[in-house]
Length: 212
Image 1 (tube, rainbow, N blue to C red):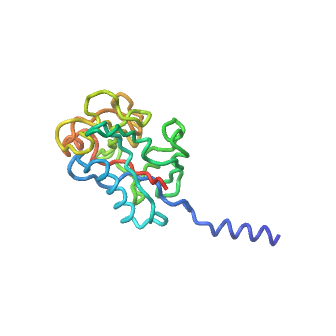
Image 2: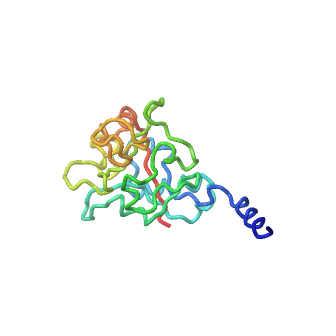
Image 3: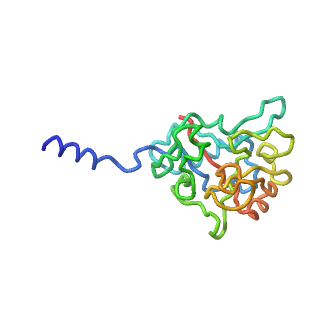
């Protein structure tokens, strides 16, 4: 009886959502369309938002934006799936959204409107909300890699706020496009300006993952 009581007290004492946050959607974009300051600027934005959230356990984590980039300036192409560590990843409520990279890019992940939260634990507007903000910048194909063709699918590697386009996913996994239920590659954006991103159901948000 004493052992059972001790076990029960330990269970009740364990806080809900004990896993620290390692995944979120940015609560705000750059305000300059898809010009995020390149991958480096996007990573810095992830770190800034995570630190500002005050969420337990995030201090000291290394954050990476889930963004792909084309080969440029003599540098190689970058695949979003290769930037984000090995997993598992948990949202601000302590829910595991994916076990590892393979799970993340499978139908078994737990991404969607309910679990793809901001760093503050807030739900992002989806289709049917006003305004709709479900387009999340990724520049990636369904498997998390950058498109191998020569067209611009990353808004000039996240430095353009005008011409070009970028692949976006639907965080709520509904809508239109070639892959409407895809969280990372639903369709190409209309352009890279803030106006165009907003006009097609986005706000310049992107995904952030902790690699440690």
